[in-house]
Length: 172
Image (cartoon, rainbow, N blue to C red; front, side, top):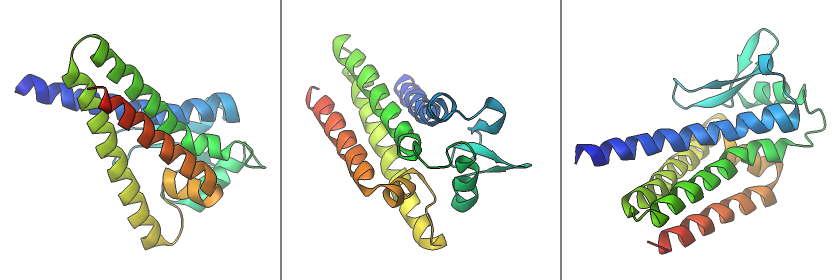
């Protein structure tokens, strides 16, 4: 039982890390944010990708400052939808790879666990984002920011998440 809990916890860490690395990678190599202006913040709740705004670091919880810091590198917001959805896209890819590995290796616990963890974390993220956005009156996370910027992109990312997770889970 302890081994199962440990695997479950480690898969959760992997899913969160891959999600954040998706944002970071797109920020660095698609948007062109230099390394001194972007960093991963993993030892806080929630975890996030911080952007330098002058002498301070902006988090998505202060969305106007975060968007201002982002626009220093992408003034037209040309890549904003890609940046905002990159974490979810990376997470989907991670779940497909790990879940596919679990399926191919005959270890259904690993595949089922990563799908379950991903769904739980995304559900929590979605509802905390919604609650925070309603509380502060402005976007405060990936989903609300993506929805405000491009409702079509938010819908597409959500549908891709549900379909890939559902199809993969159906294989177990």
